Image (cartoon, rainbow, N blue to C red; front, side, top):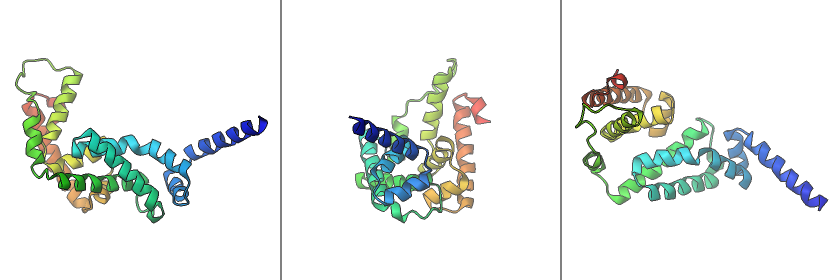
Length: 203
């Protein structure tokens, strides 16, 4: 019995130590086949990766499947990570590639226009007072009306708090292009919000 307690204590200490480890160190450990490190990395990032993918594919089941594929890739290729970006940026790069591949396979070439048709028009009743939840719903609807390229920029910068440099790494475009897309995305979003009577977010 004392041996079992000692083993459990050691396992607990190992997990606590892993939780305090940086993402980069976790990847090094994963590359050596450490399953505990893989579990810790998954717990840290799976929700963010899922939400990122879901905004692209707009299907919960597909998003869940793709999250599994992303972390399976991480398990297989952890040794190839070269530390040129944050681990979270690397994960979102893998996630973006898989999400776009899934979209092509499903042949949703006209997904943006289809999204727009499915979004309820929250601007039909400007006389209705807007509480916080209504405003959030309108903001989400307006973001969905952006072009895919502009929506992707807004998603990465505001929802995933990525820098211009990190966005460029994830999408694979120059920082200057990121800045240009951000400028036009914010301008278009501001116009959409003003149309809906939400001026405080359109400033």
